Length: 70
Image 1 (cartoon, rainbow, N blue to C red):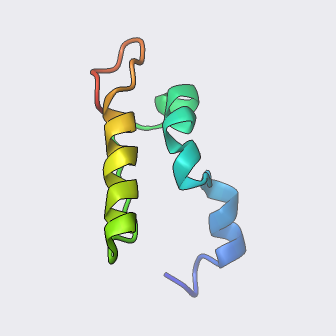
Image 2 (cartoon, rainbow, N blue to C red):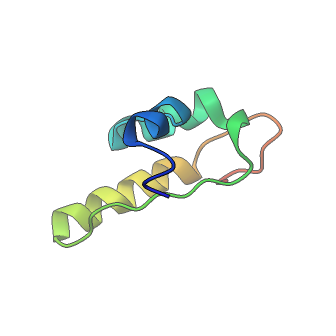
């Protein structure tokens, strides 16, 4: 696929957001997908804590017409 889709082409099709802004991004743009996933670095205790905090914030989102936590 790397030969078929360049990095520049990919950037035209995706949304990019910083981890700490991810819950706000979901609140504003959730209609784009029925399911989302993400992976974060979790090699250190600080990274694991940051990932836990982010997941907690995402799960608390209240979005009209969307089950909580999705």
